[in-house]
Length: 334
Picture 1 (cartoon, rainbow, N blue to C red):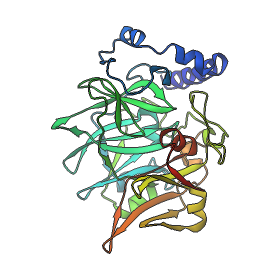
Picture 2 (picture 1 turned 30 degrees about the vertical axis):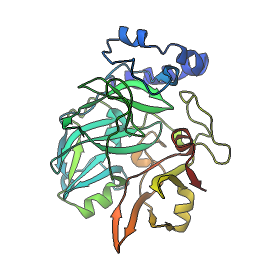
Picture 3 (picture 1 turned 135 degrees about the vertical axis):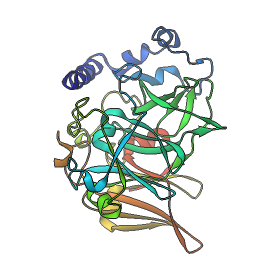
């Protein structure tokens, strides 16, 4: 199963390259999607349907984790100190979600500190984002559509089958179109740092270790490319490498970004009341075939200083092309 999944993904990429993304986009239509079994209200849409491409797998072909299992950090032996994990802390309930697991599942539906949340990772955008799953008193459960928009994961909720943009947390098609999920601050850190901070912290482990080749990166050398895969159909930035990592956050009432290279060079970079700090020791999830052996891209923490207090704020370390695609009016400090 594992080798077959990787093989099918590689074949699909070759098909996209051969046919061109415009041909694939031409296949996007509500009638076709209804034939796939979707019950989504396609009359409610905030986007052009031709922006949505098939990512290869069908609905839930990349299975979300809906009954997550955890072990204490001190008992984990299969992760190296450099392995990247998404760190989440809600009301003192500290958990780590290894990217070697999220790469193959992309969504974890969990309850942390009593709060229903979805922890998500889109490999093509290198976007690690968490959301509250409660909306107007209803708790939603999320899965993968198998679709992409601007190379980003399109999620769906199983209650209304509305489609959601992972990078923005907004419903783009369906009954809930126009609604937005509340983002929760997370950051990608090394497993070594997480374990040192919280030896009893909960670490996500695969429900079935043989289900996928956990620890393997199916997107080998993806973050060494000069352009994203042809699954991206938008315009690329001209003043920065589209695949350069940038740190995205909200500041001064709008979306802003600072290049990771600038933060890494400064180690501590201050922008208004926002402070970004970089620390070495975190392997890229999108470099070598074995994640733990990938090059060091480090970790970033983003805090805001208000009234003498420092607070972790929502941010994401993604690629420049993603920031330009979703926040074309945003400010990028290179």
